[in-house]
Image 1: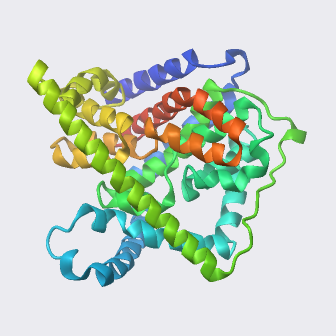
Image 2: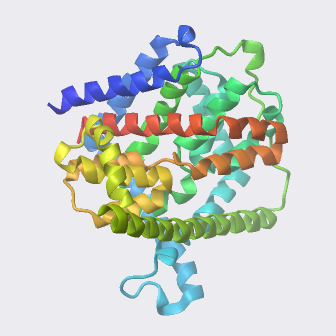
Image 3: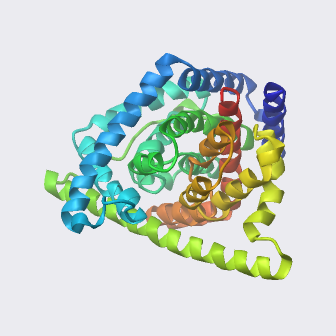
Length: 391
């Protein structure tokens, strides 16, 4: 039964994507078929094989060690307040972002990450049939983050037509940055985080290839990545440490605001209608939860978490998921859905990042902001559906 529902789910997702396509006649179906098969194979390997368990265990082990190292710095500053019993969320989950951001900065400085990003991007461009720049950007987004990635392609931003700019922004919204992956792993199981990272990479190309199909001419596809201005090692390190701290503070501020607002809105809806706002959204999103593989008996709960992620952010939704009791399979499907930046607040983040580099293009991004959220949400739905086949 789950296989039939998954097939129906994929067809519904493709239908919703096809409806929003800007040029249906130029959709190239062969790369789409290849990437769907790759998604299924990778999901099976990661979730149902010993090789996948070893890979995920190794990846999770690395981040577990990094989080332990991060605790040393946090504990030095905050003393015994943090890790005795139940520590504050900000200190346990968000402050490790500072250390991981510093580590990413070091790997950037010694040219390890640029090498990996460039050549994985080139390989992906052979599979997805899209431009080299788009493929580079997708890999870079998954490591650097949805705002920082545009700095590396700032020379091309002003020269890009609207359709290519959409794909770059869609990739940034469909992935998550490596600096916060460790934080996710403290809230949901690492196997779901890793699976989502891999599936979203291909899912972003699949959905963008339908919503926004185009062909890049060879002369338009020059992969010239902007090198960062040369800094001394400690200048770079200080900058990345501060960037990581800004991310932690930003996420904390958004959590304070969104959690408080949702609590207030829930109270108002309970008083007037006898049902919380999240409960109401749960009914709206329940059909979507069902088509991605969630049993109908849990669809309203799952739909509520999905809606929370879209109207607030993935951290708020993960906190809500941790409070609910659902089956292992449903928890896995929803966990995969949550690992992306597909929410309304990301419109402002991405548009602001592009506008800081090129004002006119930033305005262009803001105008197709809702289309970005729509496409990125479909990516999350597709990844969750594929993962559900093997849970």
